[in-house]
Length: 210
Image (cartoon, rainbow, N blue to C red; front, side, top):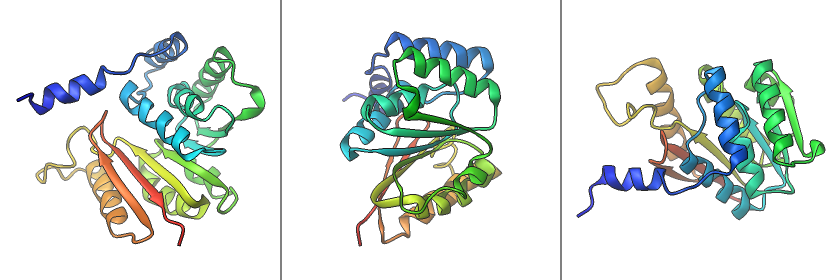
């Protein structure tokens, strides 16, 4: 029988990346930015495509890697991507331009995720990816509930946080934040939730049309 580690490695190596993504990752390495893995990116693209997303929020632009995957899955969507670091924003804009994404389809917004999200319109978004400002993640989740349309989905990378979340002996603040988020979604009757081990863990929670 194939062991789980081999299966996980196979999944992580399954997706090939286009040159534009390779270059975006190189910029991330230069800036010290941690990107989603190719397997997580492929999940984001598939979710964007399956949902027919027209309006997407991404908290944590980085150098544009996850944004490229989102736009790959939903090439006609409008992506509002939030990051507090000007260098990250500049790198992402280069990546989006290299990918041929029209400038009017991406809004690269400067600021902290929670501050920006709090000024966005209710029930106006199909897909929200939360990968920034871990200290306000719980508040971002509450904002996401307001911002999502019925049928919309919130996605949280790093949901297993360095494989620490499953280990009850790990009680650091970051690990506990992700545990609290997982517990929150398990208790919500108006969400269908799935937890995947790809990358550093990926939480997917879709809002039911009640």
